[in-house]
Length: 436
Image (cartoon, rainbow, N blue to C red; front, side, top):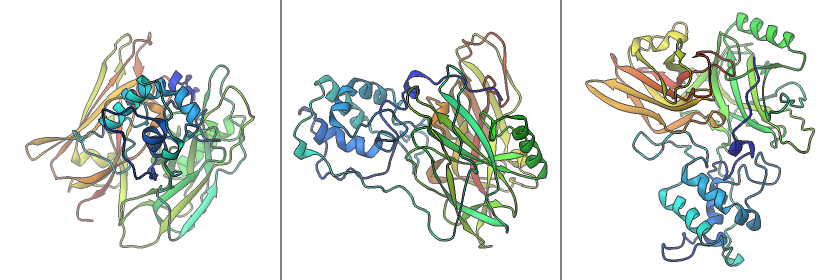
C-alpha cells in the first residue's frame, strides 16, 4: 500500500480546538449573557473541559493542553475559527437535526460557537480563577460483564515516510476467541496516546483472508504491513473504529457482532508522529465485551456505496452516485437476506482524502428521508455514529448515496480502490434484520 499524504495543517497540529468528550463541565454557572464579556474561567473552560481536553491534555494526541488558561488564550483566534467552521470538535456528520441526531455527537451549539468568537474578539480575557469549573468528570462509556483483552502483539515504533507525519499500519491479531461469540462492545487503549490518532478493527472472514493478510505481512520488512483506508484484504469487514476521547463503544442493547471461533482480525493503527521528540513506541490494547447469549440479535455491517467508478481530474465537484435496493444490501455478506427489512442503528461514512461531502437517503413507501449528511468530510476523524432514534427500513425500499470529490489536484482519473490516491464512496450501516 502507498503511504498516506501529509495531513492538512490543522490536523498536523493534532487539533486546533479538540476532540469531543461526554465529560461534565462541573460548573453550575452557565455561559455569560450576550451583553457580558466572556472570560476563560467562567465561559470557555467549561466548554474546553467538555469538548476539547480528551485530546488537548498533557501527553495526549494534540500538541498542547487547553486546560492551561494561558495557552488557551494564545489559541483563542484559532479556536474561534475552528469552531466557526466546525472543523473542531471533529465531527464530519451533520448533527443540526436536519438529518438525524447522534448519541455520540461531538457538536457545539450555535450559541457556544458564538461564545468562542466573542471571547477571541474581546482579547481572550481570563477572568477570575475562582470561576473555574471543577476538573472534567470522565463519563465516557465503560465495558461491563465478561471481557476478553488482547494487544497488537508487538512493540512498534512508527516510521512515517520521509517528509510525512502519518503512517497506517495493520497488525494481524488472534484475539483468542475459542467459541462462537457475540461482541457487544469494545474498548481500545492506545499504547502511546501521543501518536495513536485512531484505530480500526477489521474482521478477517475466512482462511483465505488470513492467508492474504499474512502474505502482506511477510512482504513488508517491518512488523505488520503498511495499509490505508482498509486492511488490504478482500474478504474482510470493518466493524469498529476508535478515536481519542470516545471511550468504549457499547453496541445497541440486545445486539452484537458475531465473531467466529478462531477467527483473526487486522488491527489498523493510524499514527500521527510529531516532528520533534520520540522515538514513540506503541503497543495498543483492545478489550471486547462478549456474550454467548443465543437470544442476542446479530447485527451486520452493510455497506451502501458505489464500488466501481472513475473521477475526472481537475474537477472541484466530481460526483459519484449509487442506488442500492434493499434486496441487494446484503451482497457483501454471504448468506444475508435483507429484503424483509432492516433496522439501522448507526452509520459509518467512508471516503478517502479528496472526499468533500456525502449524503445517504432512504426511499420507502413513496417518501424520501435523510440517513446521513456528511457536509465537511475529514478522513482523519471517522467514527460509527449512533442514531438517537434507529431508522426502520421497509421491504421494497432503496438506499441512495451521493459523494462529491475535489480532484483539482489530480492530473489523471481517480478510481475506486484502497490505495492512498484511490477513493471510496461508501456508508457502512450497523443494521439488524427485521423480525430477528
